[in-house]
Picture 1: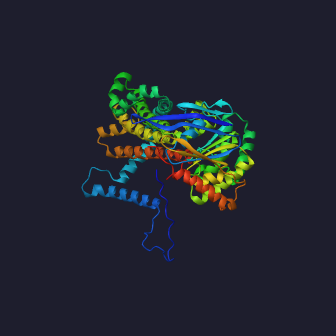
Picture 2: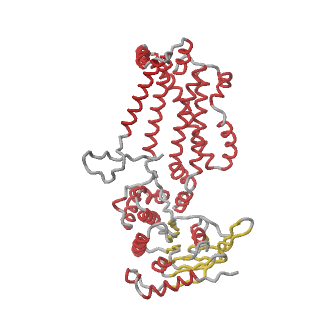
Picture 3: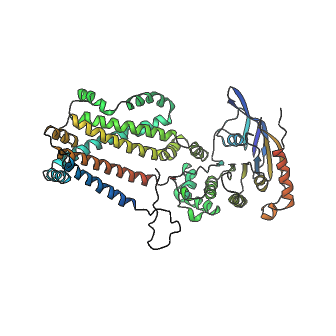
Length: 253
Length: 270
């Protein structure tokens, strides 16, 4: 369970203060798929980095299973927009990286890597270098790599932001497929309203200046999410609601 | 480092979809033509007034003599040995120092002024001092070569460490890696391309420094041989020395380039 308790983050900016996050609170139950959507500057990435332990809050606390976040840890997997694969390692070695760090014996490492490479459908590319892969494939490797260390939480920061629209739809379906087989708590940051609704069981809408949560919208559509669901009136209604919350925010003076 | 992809040679007789595109001659052929043309011009020079310049056959003859009596081999060996020792010592010292400078701010603050200062002094300018302090034996020569390769390599390594993508470091951290692991398994491989470029630059400047060092005080070596030939107005020997220096420098660079291509083949080249 993740508890975000009045988390605040302030950056100095040209002599003044920029409030990236102003007292944000949110709770996530285990195995939830929550998407965070909002305009740029709303602090969604900052919130993600605080949960990942890559940034420390200026105030408030972030708790994971009751323990305050202090630095990164293998129980929280992170998937970056820029893929962040180690270019000198093959797909397999990338996926094994965290396992090697944890001192898992070679045979076991290989077995686990095999499993997750298979899960993201890249068996044929296990021994390829990242430079040979497309953007979408690289991100699938990153997902496999994050899964391999068996985190209870996956933090995904606009992971499909750099791929084309068609690939993105396929990646969304594959991600949900992976998630349905290997349930984890997922926090997924995006600026794509369709993506936010399609993936999540809850959509958190944020606004900027100061970064804050304006609305939390439950997505009561069943999993597995199919193309039929994506094209259904119920999906459209929800999407319109999230759209309204994102694009028609009254900005405080 | 941009790789120019060569167009496959178009087949004669087949209709060209793009008639304007020029037929491409393989680059190797152009290189060969260029070399032959250069030798041809050299051959012509003595006949059109530059009577002092020895023609290629004369130089080739001298090269043969020097090879047969073992002089050339001895000089090449002496020069290569100096460069090799100085260069290897320079690289071995530069890589850890460069890593420390890139990784620890305080060390950078302490070391950088000295590196930047010595970098502005051509290693050759150190020779008088080195000779006074270290005598005219092998030590001052190897020292200036060491300095030349050290300075080129330390800067490159340091730049490599500083330029490591922060996202990669974060990716390693969230996968549970601590500083030591991040250093060994992210920073070192990520900066390898920079180090190899630094080594190539360092080797080039080592080689240049060597020859100059030998011009001043040596009993053997390509630089010494040329210096000695100058006293006797022996132009063919000077030419043999120059060509040997050029060919050896080129060979060493190609060997490092080959190593670089292999060690950093994971890089996406744009």
